Amino acid sequence: MSTHGASLPGATGPGQDRWAATPNGLIVLDGATAIAPGVPPAEQYVGALLDALRTGLSSTSDLRTVIADAIDCVSSELDLTPGDGPSSTVALLRWTDHGVDAAVLGDSTIILGCRGGHEVRLCDERLESVAPVQRQSYRERLRRGSGYDETHRQLLADLQVIERRARNSDDGYWIAEATHEAGHHATVHHIDADELHWAVLATDGAQRTIDHLHMAWSVIAAKSDDEILGLLRGLHRWEAERDPDGRDLPRAKRHDDKTVATWHPDTR
Image: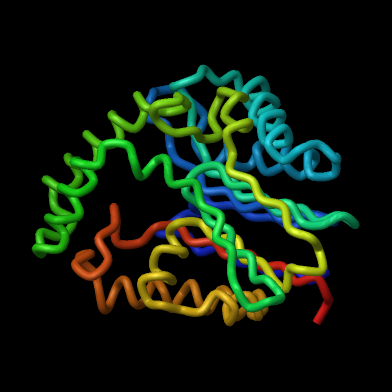
């Protein structure tokens, strides 16, 4: 098996994306900071969640159970209260003799490149359905050239309040935080090992710009670690130089953390 990957923070510091390869899997996380005072930072949460998922991927449990158990473990370890904790998306890939399993919780994405030439995209879009009017409002302002001004920041703050109310509920969306039940709501997919040619896992900070620029996921899947890092830096440059105010690609901030990890069944 061959795995590669890289992360690039959106600003100074380590950022809140994490990725890791295990002997039989790949993990990609995209953390979000909690608003409540005294709550562990997202960096600590995603670090603990990454460790718990590493352990879980060594089991034969359904990936939804793996995610649920990891959330439960981290919630207990960090003494988190549902609704007040930091959160994270989860994208998992696990390969066995029987095939490859994939799971996504939150708005990270997995692209599966099949031997027949077609691609299967796994993405949890439930968050996007929350507060559609508010989302359209801030995106339309960006398209009109408002940029990342104080009104934009206030619109995002109002949107985040609504998102927190909808977190981990049937009429909202599900995300890794302090409610282990969320893991059982992950979107999953199974594919026979001989049908899968490659896989790419990406956080939304990378995926949305890659899709906007119509880059080929099959080409990205063939890149080395250094080449993936170069790709992420190129996405940053495009955002800074070609679309600094989010006119072409309306997004919450100029640069988000970006992570891409890839898998091939045969070592190259």
